[in-house]
Length: 263
Image 1 (cartoon, rainbow, N blue to C red):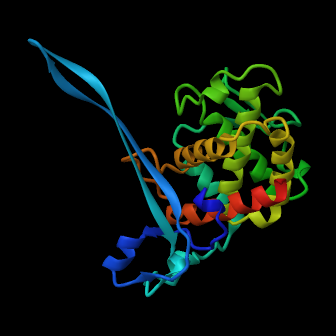
Image 2 (image 1 turned 90 degrees about the vertical axis):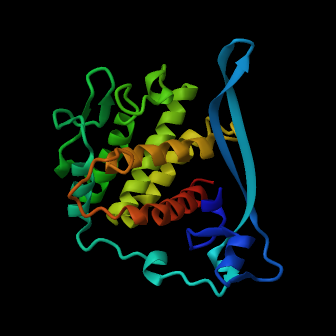
């Protein structure tokens, strides 16, 4: 939700956090709520026995964007990270980060991912209008593959039924948002964002009554991209030049553009 608030900066902080570093929120600025949830268990004594009980912690905070705060020192290179010099090579670097990447085949002129056999089929590159379209489509299918039971075990993939049902539609949103994020990381989103928005618009029309849809899809897409880029596979280290620090900014820009174009 913060990503869609219209600010270029991906950085947020509370009023007290700003004060502690000698900055201050400008008068009249309105904050937005963030919620922290933590689920766990704790042991309690029940007579002579020790039993585990579930516990839930919920806290909320009001945060302000860095653009609403005066006197805040944020390095400009963090706010405006440089884009890759060679986007197509960066696309290949992203794929090379994917530990346990399913086999990518080029046997038929349509793109799909097979959960049963765990492979991606792609049309040959020369069929696409440009290389960016090829990688955008491939990123979509690779996002699907992260939902396999041996990876993130995403219910929208593992329990998807017939074409167009609820889980199928939600999984398509996850896959296309994940593809948009990865296109942004590689620096090719300017060539693919309109196609992504048009694709999302079709699936959103099927799920208009689900008020939590975009938040859920964005969250699952984030996890999928983290998995592909190796960010969530600690302590795996990759040799690629992928800049994980860019992901927050990329996600912000992609979400705002997708929502604007698809609405």
